[in-house]
Image (tube, rainbow, N blue to C red; front, side, top):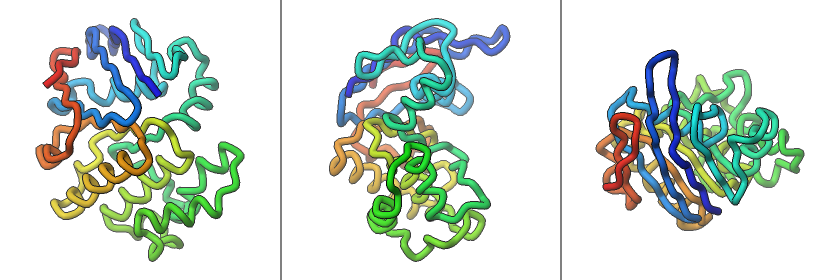
Length: 216
């Protein structure tokens, strides 16, 4: 897997948010994008995930330019290649934990029961498998969100502020879990965060400022 974001520009109305942001990610990399809230990190993640399109620039994943794909083509590509952890977690409240994790597998037309059971064990959430999101703690919700994101064994995991709503203990648990997923599954992980508690994660670091990414 190789991801390149090349000279990404994005405006909302007349307001420029991204002004030539570029990023190169190899298979197995952990990349951390830091910067203040509202600086454009989420916009950038949405573009490299194919949720949104840039006004200018290209995103190339495995030699495929996803900015040239239709919305349906990007959705299908994302379903198989990219796992997403949203800041608000985006769990479906009227689905149980099992049903939330199974959803991307069902959408991909895969057998889901064995995989869901593996993920429940891997993320240590078997005890809440029949619960609904409103019955879970913040840490449990984030683990379910991660299980759903990696269900289809994507090559890239994209996480937007994955610890912003968690206490110190759960933050440490999530950092350790991301490290474990990266090592054991050889999954590239791209994280946007302004949480200083994530600084102990060994990652390639970038700083977003004035719509561009700077290494270091």
